[in-house]
Length: 178
Image (cartoon, rainbow, N blue to C red; front, top):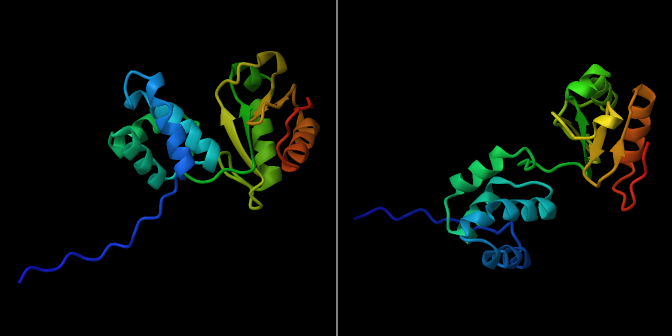
């Protein structure tokens, strides 16, 4: 007598029906469904603040490609973490302009003050600090950029402390400069 297949629990979708429809609405804008991979990743990231493994599978299903193809696109870019980010994500630049003006030391200072490593999120979930190779704002070197559009720089130790205090208060619609 053949063994019965194990009963699989139902899979609970991560992507909401409205989000899936927004992704499908992209199809007419592109030559193929696969071409909508990057915009779909951006939509999921905006909704979840990360792109977990199951979301990659669900995107692949919608786009009729393999999860590996979604992962390939996702891993090529540094924008899509698999774990949730803090309420605010900030990149501290370490390009040559910023590095020459102390950018690496300021990144270390920020991480030490928050008790995290670069790429990590504070225990309260308020702030994720990462490095960027170039933010394209060399005239503010050393500089940082929050994911809500706030630009910080030129930075020094006290200005990094003020930036962190401001960022921990949350996202802003009309970003001030520090």
